[in-house]
Length: 219
Image (cartoon, rainbow, N blue to C red; front, top):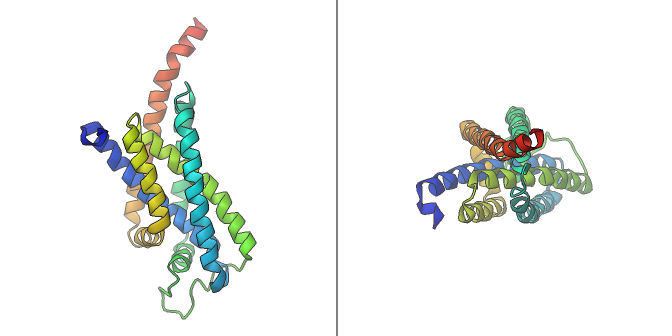
């Protein structure tokens, strides 16, 4: 198994950190969208969000692995992942109040003991929340698959473990991870640094891959 080699184990640790942070990030987005719904509709919206994220991750994984084998797309993927890092940085600066509402909605519990669960969130319909969740899931599932594929490099077993873990975390532990990241912000910043490293590494490897073709075209 590749995971028992030094390179494979290092890639696996990166993938686990990426999965943890992005699963928590995705959960917060789902929670924010669901927070504005009446209590009885909240669980439906969260279920729609988790199901959509799971299906999208499987679909994107099948396509992304094939695409990254094409010359030039590793470089493009690295640049896209840099944008993901910028987006994550901005999301990490989301107001504490908004994040608190999302965490309450996900866990369906009154964490601040104000007798309301996500009571301060802007009201919306189930249709509006579902659309908001699915649109966010498309972007975040692509981010996750791209980051995992980039970190796994050529270790196919690490890639498979990473994607299975990503789906399991979204389906089974999203609420727990969201609460963990809410309490311990530094974990998210560590994850962001790892994703930034993966993005720079993809750009470097992609540039090395493209350079001979550019040289031949110029020559």
